[in-house]
Amino acid sequence: MTSVLFQVNVDPADFAEEPPLSVRDTSPPITNLRAVAILDAAEAEFSVHGFDGVTLRTIAQRAGVDVALPHYYFTSKDKLFVKVFERRAKELNAWREAALNDALEAAHPRAPTVEAIVRAYLEPLLKGAHLADPGWKNYYALIAYVNNTPGWGGRLMATHFDPLIRKFLDALRLAMPGMQEQDLFWGYHCLSGALTLAFAQTGRIDELSSGLVRSRDLDEACEHMARFMTGGFETSRRGAPAARAKPASAKLATRKAAKPARQKSTA
Image 1 (spheres, rainbow, N blue to C red):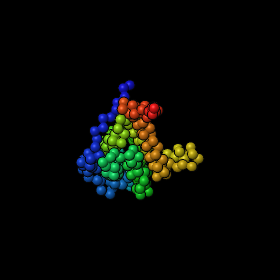
Image 2: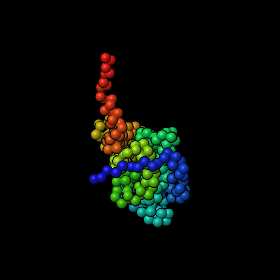
Image 3: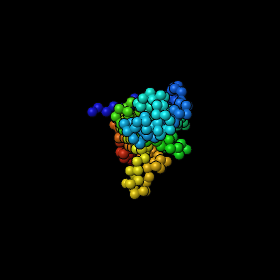
Image 4: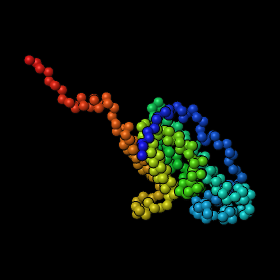
C-alpha cells in the first residue's frame, strides 16, 4: 500500500478566522418543562437499554407524563433519540473548540504540541463540575453506545462531532508535519476508542485491577490517556519515512563530523 504524507498547508491563524462551530447551529434549545423531562427520561433509558430496548411508553412513565406526550413533542422514537443525542453535543463541542483555540493561540506563531491538542480534546469532557450531574453520565454512556453501533454511529457521530474533529486533525497536522495519513487517522481511532470506553464506565478495569483503578475516575483516566495517546502519536510521527529520512546535506554533515580530521604537517 502506498504511504501518503500530509502536505501541511494549515496555519494557526486560519482557526481564528473561522466562526466557532458552536454558533453555526441556530436550532433553539428545548425549554418546555415536560419536553425536557421526556428528554431526560429518554436519555437515561437509552443509555442503559439502547434504542431497541426502550419504548415511548416506558419513557413517558419515567418522565411522569401522559403516554401520548413523547409522540406529541417528538413525533417518533427515532426523532426523540436524535434529539436526545444532539441536545448536549453542541455544549461539548463548544467546550472542546474553546480549548483547542486556546492551545493554538498559546503556541502561535509556532504549532501547538501534540499533548496540548490531545488535552484540548480530552480535558473539557473528562474534567469539570458537569461530571457530578447524573444526566451527563447518562449522556456519556449514550455516546459510547452510539459510537459502537453501526448505523447510528456513522450517522450521528458524523453529523454532530466530525466538523470539530476535523479541526483537531488539522491541528495535529500542524504539530506533526510529514506524518503518514494512515497513522494520523488510526491514531485518532485509538484516541476516540479509548475516550468512548472511558465514557461507558463499565467497571471492566475495576475488575481487572482488583479495584486499584476505577472506571468512574474520569479525571485520572484523562491524565493517563493524555500521556499515552501523546506518546502514540509522536512514536508514529517518528516512524514516518519523512521523519526517518535525512536530507543529503544532513547526511554529509554527519559523515564529516564522524571522520577524524587530518593533522597538518609542520615539517
